[in-house]
Amino acid sequence: MKILQTDCLVIGAGIAGSVYAHEAARQGLKVTLLSCDAWEQANSDLAQGGMVYEPNIDIDALLKDVRLATAGLCNETAVKELSLAGCQAIEKIFLKQLNTAFSRDEKGQLLFTKEGAHTKNRIIYWKDTTGHCLLSSIHASLQQEKNVEILQYTSAIDLLTLSHSSTNPMDRYAPLTCFGAYVLDNKSGEVFAIVAKKTILATGGVGQLYRHTTNAAHSYGHGIAMAYRVGARVMNMEFVQFHPTVFAKGKNFLISEALRGEGAILRNVNGDAFMAQYHPLKDLAPRDIVARAIEEERLKTSHDCVYLDITHHPAEHTQARFPSIYQTCLKEGIDITKDLIPVVPAAHYFCGGIFATPSGRTNILNLNAIGETACTGYHGANRLASTSLLEAVGSGFLCAHADGQEIAEQSFYIPTPKEWIVPEKEPDLNLIKQDLATLKSTMWNYVGLVRSATHLSRAEKILRHLHNEIDAFYKGYALNQSLLDLRNGTQTALLITYAALKNKQSIGCHFIQ
Picture 1: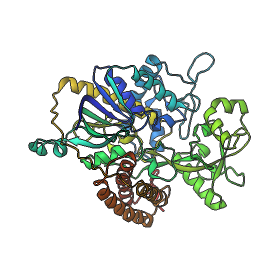
Picture 2: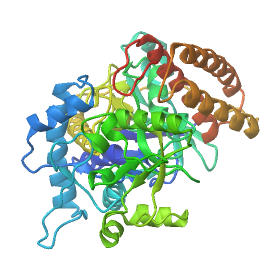
Picture 3: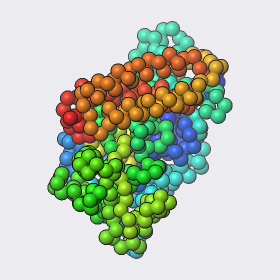
């Protein structure tokens, strides 16, 4: 078995992992950055609306809005630390070093907008493709960085720990300590090990567990499942945020909350603006409230969707502000300057994850978690709009600098990992496809936007049986990305369902009938 060595193994090349790689490399550390697909395929790349940023951030005002949107369950220390670090990193990396494009006025000043549950304009953006703008900017920089090795189409299989993976039998008595991962080359099928002083999980969210989602193709909670298997603490797993407005006809794609920030109005099939009945902030209410209001209106009217109306805005402004959404809808036969946009809720952002401090520390030594994979408590029971990119940038920044200091000051024991035996028999892809469909339909129907004790109990039985079947199946076949999606997705889905069963209180995006 081939064994590679690095200082920092970063699993996931979205904005959190990329910021980490950028900062770690500039401290002279060797970084290996993994992406299970082409490295542009990340949830960060799909982020439309924008990112909270203030040059002199009013942290108390932001905390007040976060507290409201998160149903009072946010970790206030994490909100303050990550918001301050995020703004510092945005200014240092994206505005000064990379000169990343953001929308500006005729004088070259940054434009700021407002989204749901924000009390002021504090969100910077690039048209309606902010995430793509950020990610392409930092990826271009990383490609020129001599200390960064980028391995695309390479998936982590399992984490290496002293107690599980070392060839030294005495290491089984060591404290929980990570020293890298077994990985799969998705093109050749080769399994090899990468040993590292620091291993950073930045694998994104869990949206692909559901039938309808805004997430990138392999967002099955890989990092969460791998960490849980070696003893990492997870938390807030019941809090899956559903975005209220995803295109309802044809292929799912996000219709940014920024449209409502610019004045778009939600209407039911009868043309009635309904959000005033549900919340004083109307169309800019917190996302969980908007999403459930849409579901209630769909049931009341016996219609399969509601509609978003921005036709009252000047057509030229709409086309210039939301060019990607305009063009994508146009391909589906909807001219958003003239037609109402059909929308439904879909699984969007995961507020739970691997317990981590603002600098990414978990309960396992030398294993860090950042971005959406981690749960710092910033998002509590329901994320405030446009804070996800801020948290991802801030956590990647803080984690890289903390690791740089520890690597400079500490010694690291890196043993030889055990050999990974790869079965030659290829798995039945039809079985995997069917099991993934069962997983998605179970989560959508029973562990979705509106839950009940009966539905959750049904889901737990189905998922537990599926998990046992897949665990046995997994051990006898050669690996591929779909099998990893199924294995890790089923584990993460069970964790979400267990947490939802235990929490009897409706709070934030966990709503019990």
